[in-house]
Image 1: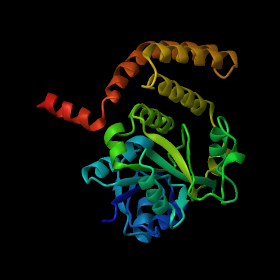
Image 2: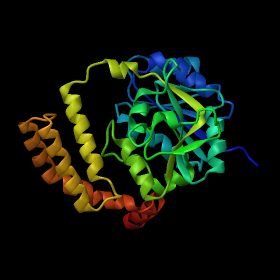
Image 3: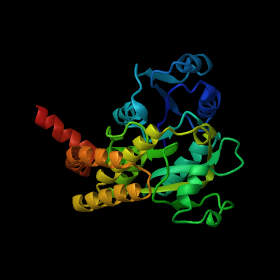
Image 4: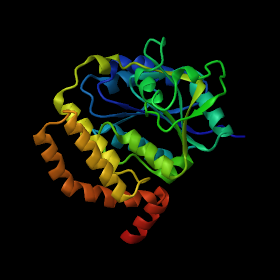
Length: 308
């Protein structure tokens, strides 16, 4: 049996401080990888550092900050063009163990119903589970119920963030690329929603690990502008959720902004701004989301025929 073709894709943006750990871990993977760095116009010399330390890594410099989703799409198009078997998406501030990706591939081959598999995420020091993972996993589950001693155990979850995703060629072929409605934040939630639409399961594997160094995210203050941008990303996710009817999406949207206003997370002027903005933008999002209900490759074929 031939070895699978696996692409590891890392989107970089001023990530020089993590180059050694991130790309060093991929280069030392026990299973061969084609490593692709998509650089979003870093100003700290990240591409130069990667070239110097890891010449085996192919670098694509976008020339501008495309955001997480659009930059990853450059790599995903390469994956589709080369019919690569697997893609491993890794954040620039994260790194894996030598056998992490090999284990994930082995597990996915035994459980092909999983369109996305993640290693178990730990913090940058490797002492505790990643803080954000604990937050969203503990909502429907209990962290204490994870059987850490059962290394072959795979847990199905409704969501896991895209800091360390293994996905398959067939999944990308169906679900498609990250949606350009999202610049940064929300794109992985939207992608998982679309995976659910196509009955692709999401999970994590206990026996494989990765480490995500994001104390810098938790300890810096989030500006009010960023908070408001995150709210709009959430609203975009709600309106673009193809698993729900258009009416239900609108009801959820209205309920959510109402709760935000009542809880004083947004001001009256922000509430009015959102209502006016989405009176025009909301119907467009819902209308365009219908295109996502057709498998990506079929949509491309239809588009080619139409253009011809």
